[in-house]
Length: 179
Image 1 (cartoon, one colour):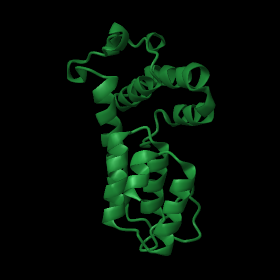
Image 2: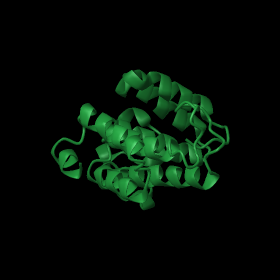
Image 3: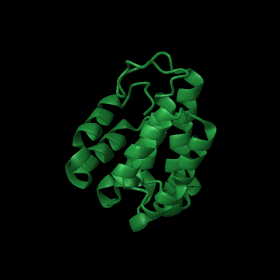
Image 4: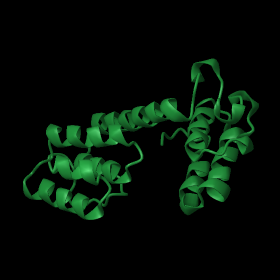
C-alpha cells in the first residue's frame, strides 16, 4: 500500500480501500500510524492523510464508541490520546509554517511581505496559512481583535469555501477552548 501512496497520495479510492483494510484486518496499530505520519511529513497539506489519521485514532475499537459520529464528542477516547493528537497537529502545522510562511518568529517578525507581526495589519498578509497561524498566536496572547480580523479575512476573502469554519473559530475567541 505504501507504494500506491507514493505514486498518488491523494487518490480518494486508494484511501477508501485503505480504510476498508484497516477495519477488516484490524490494522489500528502503530505501524499504520507511522505510515500515515510519513505521508503527512512529506505533504502536510494532504487532507486525505490527515483524515485517515483521524479515522485511525478516533475510530479505534479499543477505546472508541462505535455509535459515535466523527463530529461528536466521544467520552471513551482517553484524554491522553486527544492531547497527543492536538500536539501532533500543532507540531505538524507549526513545522510547516516554520518551513514556508514564518521566518524568525522568535524575533517577532513575520517575513512574508515584510510585515511585522506586532503591527496587527492582517490585511497585508495574503497567505491563508499565515493568517491562521497568526490568529492562533494572537488568540493565545489575548489579542482577540487582531485574531478576529485574521479569521474574518480568511472567511471573507482568502478561504471563502471554509467561511463557516472561520466564523466558528471567531466565535471561540476569548473562550478557554483549544482548536
